[in-house]
Length: 439
Ligand code: FES
Ligand SMILES: [Fe+2]
Image (cartoon, rainbow, N blue to C red; front, side, top):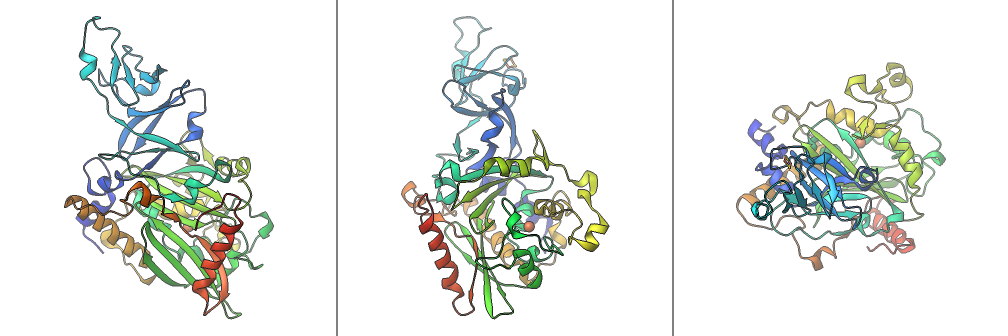
């Protein structure tokens, strides 16, 4: 349990808030590339409690991310015209470059120099494998680590997002809690694993013919091993099988607000939980394939039919009780909320309330990774406050290029050899990868 003050410290992310300052030291997903592909080249972005306008210049392809309200008299820049590499407010035609500099004030006297002294808030943005990333912190933006999801070719990565109506931290914490998968995502009957493409927990475990759903259901209390790494945490869940072998599931926390987990034997998911504000967040997922190119159309169709655009709000949500069906709960699924595990996670997080009341929680052994993560976050908050540096992945470009992986997979092997089993399996997968995934 913690005090209200401690809970506020690690959850609130607006400008000047302690956890917000930590998140601002990292690149954050701001939009899907796809969102800028419609015929409107400007979209609203609300990120870390700030209202922004993201635009793409049609001629150069360059991106800009600026304050949403024009500093003249506050009109909405999301209705602006993208011109000359910048964005022009349509109220009085003032033009701002992607760096926020006001370039023109066409309604002012010709000899006015006021624009030279006027700058709108702006943040650096880059595109990587389907996601537009923003850096909202001070100083130089940090280098990107050489994670698989960033270095894989575009053909092998698919990105999607979804809206959850809760604080980002409880959304992140469900992803570093390996035990919930045995309950929340339990299916009382297993589907044919041949139909598992693009879905989580539906493939066979490792190289067996045991559906992962069965394995998780039959082994609900894994032994957890949590270790700190250069990028965050590695979380290993060990489940012993009746035949004497051991199932090893390797997942990760990527500091500050992402998880990196296996999706199937060929694909991983790297998923950021990004605050829109204190009480809503988006998950942004990058699905990375070590094998065949990703079937993007299929992945898109599977997901878009469960969401309403342009907000990417799940169709199953609090307003319709997540589609809860007690008959289904009695016969088919643990939750009675359908087969989409994203909905289960969404319910778990949203049902805690907008910001989980951590003054009244009772953490247990299975929450080991959550405890470690909170310690890391508090340590980062303190380091920033003390101006110490040394946050996770606060490294040079050369060092960032050495931060690869991480490893996320399911493996099965003899109990004694479990440590080499997952490393060997990962090495083999990388070796066979058509894009030469580094280990
Ligand atoms: S309010 Fe934007 S130019 Fe006047
Ligand atoms: Fe989950």
